[in-house]
Image: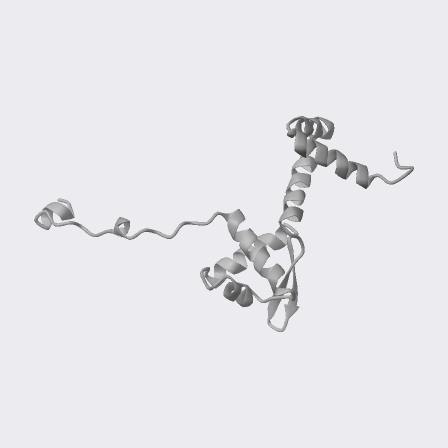
Amino acid sequence: MSARKAGGGGRRLGVTDHPRPRRRGQGELEALVLAALREAQAPETAGGVQERLGGDLAYTTVITILTRLLEKGAVSRERTGRSFTWTAAADQAGLAARKMRKVLDAESDREAVLASFVTGLGPADERLLRELLGQAHGPGDD
């Protein structure tokens, strides 16, 4: 018998009666942690990162995110006493570029992947890419 029937038709309170905080995705949390480290302008402890984020995240969550970012090469860490201090090694653009290179490196036909990527660009992005490639090649480069 359900709680509603057992309670004489009264409303049953449950977890759905209170709105849950929105779950943030892993990428969003990583971006927040990277932003906190860049704002610090000096190596920061995990506890310091947690404080910069307003204490919304559990300390263990901050450690997990920092460890994932370390594995991706987006942060570096240095032992300081019994703990670590963390430093951002890449901004969002650098992290996205690393992801793109990782995907490209995993493919056997790089030319086909690059060609497909370029043909999928809009005119403005294609123009920007051409400009950037022109800047990358100095005089006499082939």
